[in-house]
Length: 306
Ligand SMILES: C[C@](O)(C(=O)O)[C@H](CC(=O)O)C(=O)O
Image 1 (cartoon, helix red, strand yellow):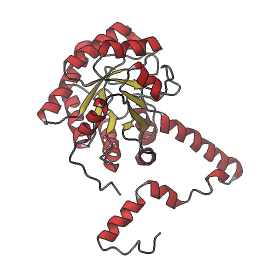
Image 2 (tube, rainbow, N blue to C red):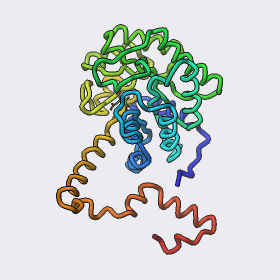
Image 3 (tube, protein in one colour):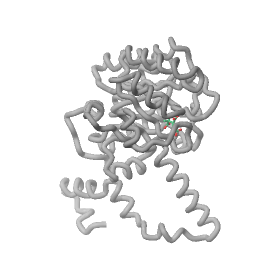
Image 4 (spheres, rainbow, N blue to C red):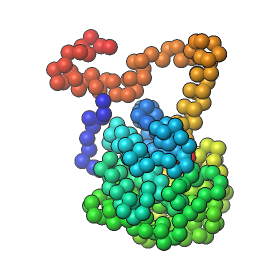
């Protein structure tokens, strides 16, 4: 069942507090469904990231090339953020899925879904993963209109969702243009900057320095174009948030591939999975809390355990 924990503090305020905590960096494993989110929560992470790439590959079975709609992304975000509202969720919102009106709807629906933060980028709606080649961008004006729409909707709904401005301009126009886009987005009310596809340590250091005191996010994608940084290395450079979007999807990809290949070849499952019974999976997915809830309502089904 969903978490019964409640908090008078909104997920966005919780995240704002985490970002504002001195000498700390917000660390978000990328999750893409209920199970991956539960596993990350069970491991004790205090914030999560919903990856658009992972959402595309898991919910649609399609690549991250602009195929997920607002509804796909919002539904996934609502599911993940409902599991433990005391753990703020940063969610990918791609391009906002259209013009200013659609960006406004996206922000409103993410807010209602309990999302703490979302990032909006300047690729064309037919976007692709930021670590692929030949990206196409919208004009600066169009990007600023997306940011304005997001900020205006937050104000209109009297909310505090954290708006993260992501620019993909580095690959196409270079560092200075990308930095300028981020500065403009911040001046319009974006709270956090996300320079996509950082290629060198120098760029990583420069973006943090130039945008200080605005918090900057580092996107640590396995096999992507950016330098490999650990949490503490990113923190030392000056980043305030680090996401590992592919941490769960890559692990799932590798281990599911291994298991199904083994089944195909041998007609049996791999030995190392033999001890993983249904109860171990369910216990990570809130089984104890569900049984307690049922008992408190007078239910008898779980008296003898399961
Ligand atoms: C951050 C990202 O937008 C995502 O969808 O998680 C992707 C990451 C990835 O492809 O693994 C991106 O950087 O475009």
